Image (cartoon, rainbow, N blue to C red; front, side):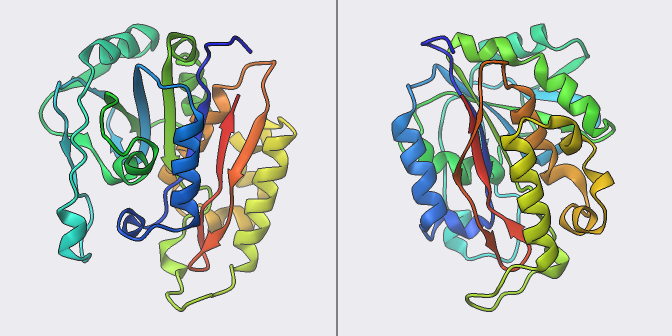
Length: 259
């Protein structure tokens, strides 16, 4: 690994309430932020921005987006006033071999991004750009697209993907100290073991794993960001798990880095 290469990071972001209620996951994000060399900017791929085609935020002052409902007002009051980076947005469009829409008005920094960034960079002083997930692409196409972003890591850009490897809102159990669903534990363990063994093909073709995979990934938008991080792995690098757990029975909090 070159001495200046930024890692690629995946964060299982979990509940928006973590932005108000620190816990062992937010502590892991904070510790990770302290351990990293300060990047010139962060490119975020969030599960919460799914579009037709590929979009990238290009504004100088992205707004904080509260893309949820039914939570306390204190959560809606949170602002993450990090600057944007039109230069990074242009660089992303240069690297990708697909048409990219430069978004300057409608989007900003969504909670899949700021709920983690709030702990990684609490001063909100690192420029942030978000890259959308094209909802029409397959898992393979997302993985191949992500590979094209690899040069950014050697340009002191941190690439942060935010989602959840296990994400089934229909089966959430709100009771305290609830045990993980057996299928959630099963698929989370499968993903982790295959990732650590550098077996990316089985994770791209996740649906071949069977019922545990389909229950863990009823819709793919929270899983796709993990493929972006995997795709950024160079031959001389390994994946490292920095935090893990399953909350509310069916929300996986696995976090890993490539470095």
